[in-house]
Each structure stands twice: as structure tokens, then as C-alpha cells.
Length: 423
Ligand SMILES: [Zn+2]
Ligand SMILES: [Zn+2]
Image (tube, rainbow, N blue to C red; front, side, top):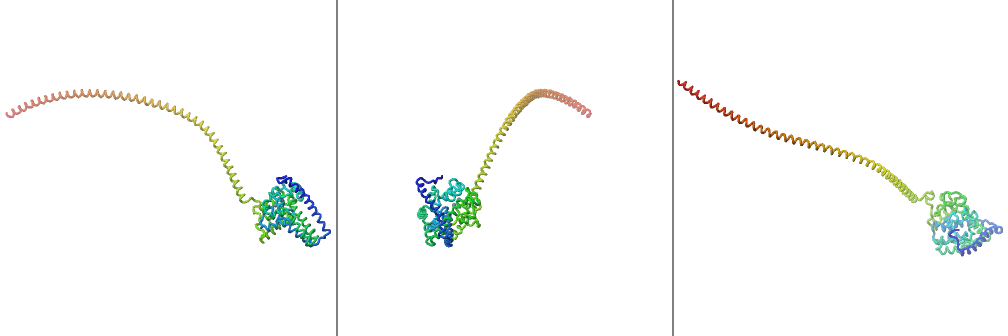
């Protein structure tokens, strides 16, 4: 069935245990009818009620909230007394009870569950599994924290001892009625009340929390079992000593443990944290979740950006390709144009050069002509000058002759004039 299936050797012991427990259970139920002969005196009924109440407290505060779940603390003496009180309810040893209960929480309402009404039906979950030899032994691996105390191992081994001592006490105090009505009646009622948590609290009631199992909250079962009826609360948060999460969820066991904590008999009672009661994630978990979400959003955004970048790159390279083609065509066009222009320019330059050469030639020719003309003119001028000079000389000579003639005439005349005057 599960990893906890007993070995063959254990099965032999278990088979013996089974017959022993089956006979014991049946015997206890039959012995209830012995009240026909003992009568039902009110003292014995009161004893029955008190023993039911005290031992129900032993079951819930001891077997369940302390030994199975360790929801509060107490010293070793108190621990022993609590184990003794719990076992006086005759539900086997605290180690056996805790080991099976821890198994129940681990596999709640799954095929491996020890007592799931969903898997195996009401009768099995209620009482059948207790008679199953496969579950008769204590799986010590599940209760290592408890098994290190020898006094608990002793009580677990001789688990009938507390019940036996209580039974003898009842008989000595109130005789047969004390034993039958006071002890046996209360024990049988205690058993069935406890068993309702395994059978009914996973079937009837409301579910406040969406746990992985079928656990329910039931006001009636909570009254009957001193707070264990808030079973859905408990499956939702097992670490709490308190199982009634709201003020109106009556939890007698917790109230008594609270009084005991004030008397310093127990300590460190655990309450459910607010976020657990309100079924919200722990603030740190919420923060981690928010951080995870933020990182996820960030990653998604990065992925989106990467995708967009990739698309942009593809688009850019596509455009570059198109542009490249355009550019190449344009460059080719431009280079053709430039080439044409260069050719044109070269032709123009050639024309200009040719024109300049022609002009230079013409200028040269002009200069040469001019020079020749200047030479000619110079020669003409020289000749002209020479002629002028000759003519001037000639004119001078003539003038000098004329002057000489004039002077000679004049001399004559003067002489003639003088001769006349003297006359
Ligand atoms: Zn539990
Ligand atoms: Zn349960």
C-alpha cells in the first residue's frame, strides 16, 4: 500500500495485535451492557462525564496537538503526564498515535491515507483501520523526535497501563458502576467521538480553505471533540495550537491550554498567523511572488524588445539592401554623369586651351608684326630725322648766307649813309 507497509516479521506481531484489539474493542462495547446489572447511579454518570471531558482533553491536547504536531511546549514531567493522560483514553501509545496521524496528514484522502472515508468508506475510516494489522505497529521513523524519550517509549510499549490504572481506580472508588458506567462508557464514547474526526470531519461540514483533502469544519463535532471539529482549519494550518480560528469557533482544548500556559504548565502556544486565517500568502511569499512576477514581466518585456529589435534589424537590413540597390544605381548613374561631365570638362578645357593657344599665336604674330612695324617706323623716323637734319643744316647755311648778305648790304648802306652825312 505505502512505503510504510510492515515487514513479514511485523505482520506476525500485527496479526496477534489484531485479534487482541478486535476482541478488546468488541468486549468494551459489550461490557457497556453490564450497566443492566450495575445500575446507572448519578455519581457514576458524573464520573463518566468527567472522564470523558478530561480524557478528550488528553486526546486533543496530548495525542494530537502536542505529540502529533508539537504545536506548543512543556517540560519533560508535564510531557510524561500528558502522554499518560492521553493514553488513559486507550487509543494506544502516543508514538503510535502520532506516527499514524502524521501519516494521515502526509497522504490526506489519497490512496495511502490510513483512514480516508473518501478512499475506503465510513466504517473503515471510523474504526476498521484500527483493526487492520498493517497499521498495528509504530513507525518510529515518523516520530524520531518523541522516540528519544525512554519514558515515552515505555508508555508506548505498555500502552494499556494508564487505562488499566484508571479502570482499577474507578472500580476501587465506585465499584462495578464506577468501572462500567464511569470508565467503560466514557471510554467507548471517547473512542467514537475521536473517530468521528477521521470519519465525519472529512465528509460533513463546511470547507473554508481549499486544502488538498476533504477536511471540513463542523460546529457540532468541534463541541463534541473540544475543538477538533475545526478540521479544515487544522488541515489548512497544522502548526497552530488553536484550531478555532475565529472567536465564534469554540475550541475548549485551546482555552484550557491557554489557562495552563498562564499557570506556566505549558508554553509557546501557537496561533495561526493573520495571513493564514485570511488565506493570503505569507507577506514574504507575496513579496517573492511579486518579485517573481516582476522578473517574469521583465523577461517577457526583454523578450518582446529582443523580438522587436530582431524585426527592426531585419527591416533595417531589408531597407539597407533596397537602399544599397538604390544607392548603387544612383552611384552608377552619378558616375556616368560625372564621367560625361568630366569628358565635357576635358573637351571644354581642350577648347579653352586650343583657343588660348590660338590667341597666343595671334598675339605672338601681332607682337611680331608690331615689332616689325616699330622697326620700320624707327627706320622711317631715323631717315626722316636725317632728312630733317640735312634740311635744317641746309636752311641754316642758307640763313647764314642770307645773314652775311644782309650784313654786307647793311654795311654798305651804313657806309653810304655815313658818307652822305659827312657831306
Ligand atoms: Zn492533525
Ligand atoms: Zn484529517
